[in-house]
Image (cartoon, rainbow, N blue to C red; front, side, top):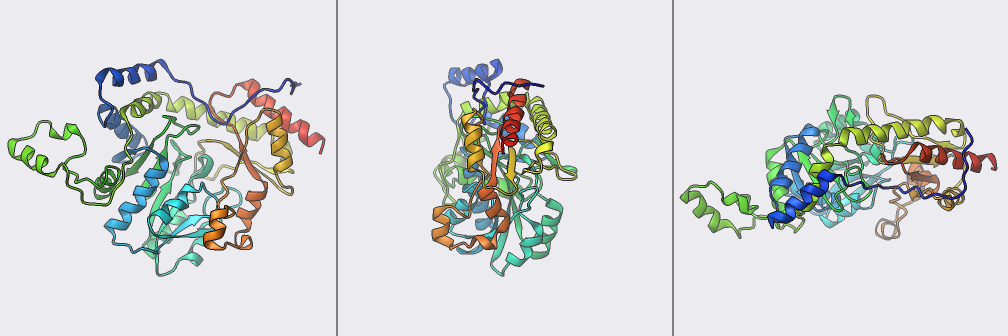
Length: 399
């Protein structure tokens, strides 16, 4: 099929289409004259955690905050020390390892799988020391990590697992959902993510002690007896007396990581359509994989892990033998938005703090030089998809 690549169109990485229900629920929040934690926050937590096969959901103001309190909760409950170590993949968004530093622990980097971009289980054990306490697995771009092997290693070495699932929702690894593959999982509803509420994050867990501590840390470290004004409701005189005495009792060094009812209302509305959203992303991903397969000699296309579902938050690509800059400039000049594939070890601050040698992380180094991603969201039209393919064809036909 002939597709004209002029005039240039704009194909952005993210999308937002607010439904009538989303607008209605936000207006209900405004009409209620209450922005603090309430019925929409509770509904979003309950529905989201149930979809991801978890008992508990705890809202916060970002995926970064969710990560921060996940590690903080485990550190406090299990009495870990400052400078204890946490294993982190060498390709991820900088927040994954920043929160380790902010929790006064030490990130130890592990190179990733070449084809799936998850932390490489074959390289984990060589990085474990007597100070290692946890592994943060990152389900990048919509693809779950190789969790069977990671679970086996964590069990053998008595390590906790945190899922950084900020880029992957509504996907299963074998018979389990992301969010239910670890001790504590962390999601994001930031702009351009799968569910988009502007700002927002959520933890999921099946451990009640962890859930209580997470909610406390999101709320300044407050005693769990009182997190919101609804905790006063339907209490006996003696119970209310105790609550009043402890409203300003703080049991941990926490944070103001709360979110408002407006973000929660947007999340509740979007959960009505998550099946359709993910189905369209998967269609787009598979269509691009098929239509670009003849270019696989030039670049690595996404690959589906056996037994895992892909949410296609984006469409990752890595050029085999050439650095990406000329190609991504060409794509951008033709209206196709791109981003780097989550560079971490080459960041100036990480070079300064850890004196990282690129040769120790050959896959990450290759991806940093050659990897990028393009849009795959549910609002791409068939014409958008065919335009992307035509632009790729035109570039490589002239290489």
